[in-house]
Image (cartoon, rainbow, N blue to C red):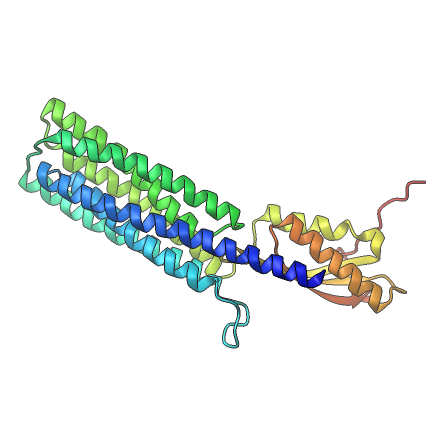
Length: 318
């Protein structure tokens, strides 16, 4: 039975890895096609806003490639040099993607200001509008698929960051679409670089969010309070199973994994065998509450309980 469970778990892990890598590869393919279309349309129309969208998609392509390879690396099993696994490669990849977004936004701002200063003229706006409509549709579909794969994997910073890029790209494409349509209707050429500046601002906001989130994981920030409270409540629920108290609760995230460790005290008279069995049940209960966490429990006797950490047994039915 244990062997069957291990084989099932290994097969499930392989399916998850394949699903995540496949989703990242889909993002690479879609971005490659959109870049080509936007560059061609931007060259034909002369729209700086459309060319900045092509640059935005190019940044997304780099981010997708980074996500693809980071997922493959993160899925490698723990080894002698990395006993805790490679999950944080995903967080590092997300940070790199965020920095790329910020660099790209700087290039966009420079080009938009230059176009405002020297002027420009948009022609054949219909081609650009068609490409933008296609870009919005493709990015929203692929983004939804990436988020679905990330949720199925229990959370994936790299896929979530990639999906965020695509959603931002879709939103900025919509803004450029409106701006290009207004230029075609009103012939107000200044609208084109102004829209490009607005796009750059939206990209900066997205980049800052991604860098901030990934940085928190890289420096081992604690899990959100709602998850920490779920862990505490789960431990307290074992008060009638011999658990007298707990302390030194620590929890963090590495890629899609949550890592939890704590010291648990057992009531006097509890045998080591019983405490060990109860600790395993507690591990399973915590995993069920916080998305399959990797839980490490250190067993201690009741006389080590500290003030304010005791766990009271559940009241009897009688």
